[in-house]
Length: 226
Image (cartoon, rainbow, N blue to C red; front, side):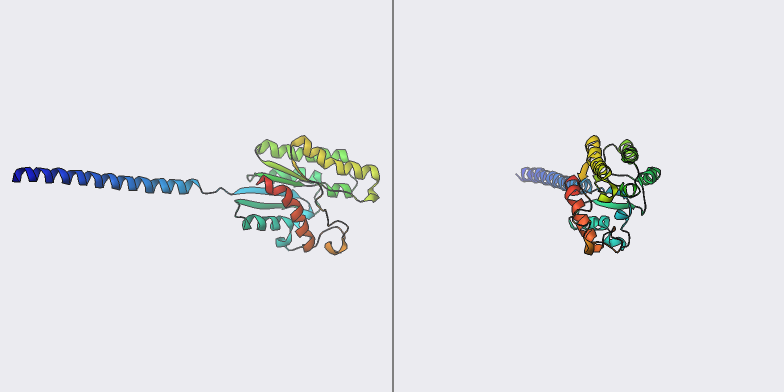
């Protein structure tokens, strides 16, 4: 009888030990799974390149007041994994952009916002020439980063440039957007151009308050792409 009881205790002990080992193994697997899941949810930072003129560079403003910086603030407030790169250059023309684009494309670009052409217009550069230069820049981006989302900012010229020129210039941007499947900001300076209190003394470059409106104009088009 005693021998039987000993045998039962030995069997029960073995079963309990096996269950304990299985439980430990399951806990380990769950812990490893949780670690892996946590690693998988780590977000990769994507780049948004704003490529443009003094309007993008924030001429006459603190860098934190330029509209690309304000876009970054919006992105950060929404905890979105995007980094804004300000590729604006005062006085930049579409021809100058052709020579500069490859250098900026050395870093990964996930969203490309093109703001060029205004300086061409003010200098009376033929619209056909500006169109050709902008298409060259777009092609370079598409070639290097075919999956990048593309945006183009429309601009307009003052009536003093002549009706034919101003019309052709204005139409250039939606035409390029349609041809290249780009999202279009109809007019970057909407609600800012011609409003004295929203522009600096030169009447061309927005004040800090003006750039807040520019950031709104851009954000409406950009946000759905992020």
